[in-house]
Image 1: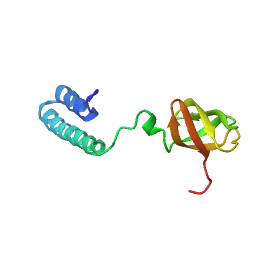
Image 2: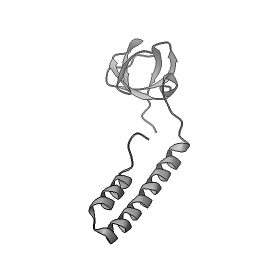
Image 3: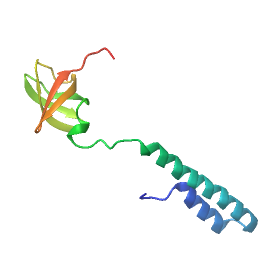
Image 4: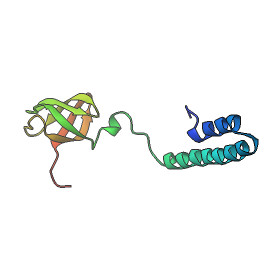
Amino acid sequence: MSTPPMFLLLALFLLLFLPWPWSLGAALVSGILGVVEVLYWQGRMRGRRVETGVEGLVGSVGTVAEPLAPLGQVRIHGELWEARSAEEVPAGSQVRVLAVNGLRLDVEEKSESP
């Protein structure tokens, strides 16, 4: 973990700056909350798969930056990609990534239904 949980920092602060009987109790409560926080986030993140690279692009939705006729550019995850579509798609439309071929994305216009 890159930064310590805030409750553990609070426990140290309370231990140093509160008067004696209160500092121990407050530091213990804050320390326990810190441990609970760490366990909560570890459990929550355990089952998640990291999505990086081209595998994370398939199924993503983006916006057409340059009209696709059939080649153009789309913006997905803040990046500009060259894309190809089977039909013409105007700029500003939403598209879904079907496949990744090298540095070119195969896309289709996103349907309006959920």
